[in-house]
Length: 135
Image 1 (cartoon, rainbow, N blue to C red):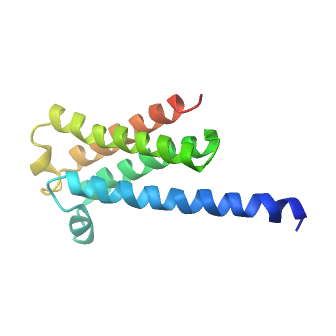
Image 2: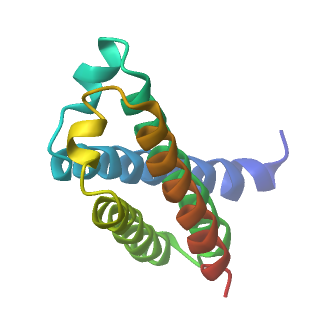
């Protein structure tokens, strides 16, 4: 391996990747905390609506986080933009909950349409979020 990769590439990769995993875990913890149903339990029970909604939220956050990583100038910058992306993704749940008042019952009842819609809005906002993070 080249000396440059060992001196700058690998430590930068490891620090950014480690922080991104921490941010992703934080996002998932926050997301499942704000939803009034237990996604992980529902997914383990085979609930497709919960799987679709949580998957869309995770993918939406990962897209936004990837943009934050690619455009950040250092770890603090990445952390700040990752936190902003997290807040926007949590907002997606609030928006869909306003649009679909029955969402809180739909996901546990495995109404797939609601789960897919929530997941799609989350992914869509994540894409918009990612585009806005390119400064």
